[in-house]
Image 1 (cartoon, helix red, strand yellow):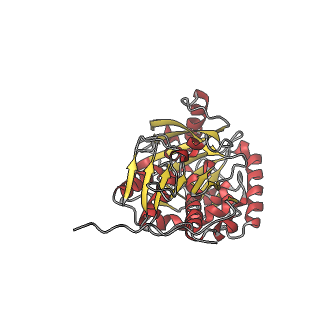
Image 2 (cartoon, helix red, strand yellow):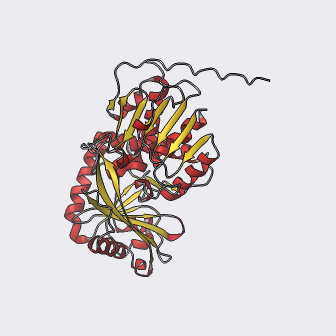
Image 3 (cartoon, rainbow, N blue to C red):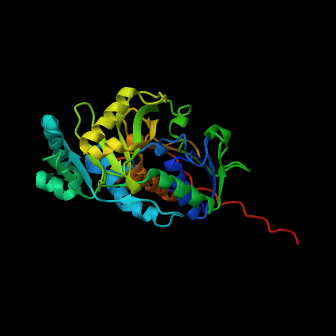
Amino acid sequence: MFPLLQSPSSITVLGAGLMGRLLAVALAREGHRIDLYDAGGPGAEGSAARVAAAMLAPLAESAVTEPAVVRMGQHALARWPELLAPLAAPVFFQQNGTLILWHRQDAADAARLRGTLERNQAALPDLPAMQPLDGAGVATLEPAVAHRFTQGLYLPGEGQLDNRQLLAALEATLAALPVTLHWHSPRSPQDFRPGQPGQPDWVIDCRGLGARGQWPALRGVRGEVVRLHAPEVTLQRPTRIVHPRYPIYIAPKEDHLFVIGATEIESDDLSPASVRSTLELLSAAYAVHSGFAEARIVEIATQCRPTLPDNLPAVRQPADRVLEVNGLYRHGFMIAPAMLDVVLQLLHTGQSPLASRFGLALQLRTAQQPAPAPAPVPCPTP
């Protein structure tokens, strides 16, 4: 296999959500010339990454996803601190584990979940051991909810970050690098002729659902979240509640800000959240801690995650010098560093041992040729 890139190369990245920003920063730091295009603005208002809890929970998510995603999540837990450290602004990052709780009437559902997690842990022994908790254990880990729950599960090592702080820090970092930012400028791969004179050497498409015109298998899966400011509530870690219809999570950020979500609807509808969904989320939060009764609703948001038929992410090369990275579904923050490292390996070597280790299928063109050396830059005439 041959490297796909010479250094420096000219690379156009389409989509400035989480994946596009991470790739643009990494490639610019390697000395490549980057143009980043997005249909929206620097606040990532149209990105699924903006409406997310940004939990990094491979074992917890193993109940609803494939081993490949869990392995990518394990990889990402170690990589996030390395990616955050050099950014232009600090980003809240925490690795205090995940707490799973349930009410007495949901004990049967909790037992089924525990069995699923135990089987997954046996199949993926690198995951930290799950710890069953009695009432005293719950009180030790999360004193604020001790009087309401007498059993739980603790998943050590899992984490979270602040998604909006991260998007802003990546934008500030891009502004300080040799990256040309094209906001409110929607583009598709068909707008470029990579490798031709005056054109980029490569195009990398990270547009999520914006890429459906080129990747028709993509679909939207709707999610709804509530952001609350609750000064009377203190939680030390993301807390998941076993619910008869779907698992509800409460992710505490800095300054008593909480992201609460659960709903997952097979729809690309971006209309406002329903009354039913909102009431269920708020009722679940109040059932965990009565202090949420006096919380202030900061935002009720909806967004659709880009999802492929098997609910797994994918990297494919539909044409020469074009890569598409998509399908991160509900696991964007949990797996983005792994997807970043896979793409960088592909560009550097033409192959990715990491993809094989994760069990991630790559759809690449069979005959890779070495990238041509960049044309010499003529010296200016005195």
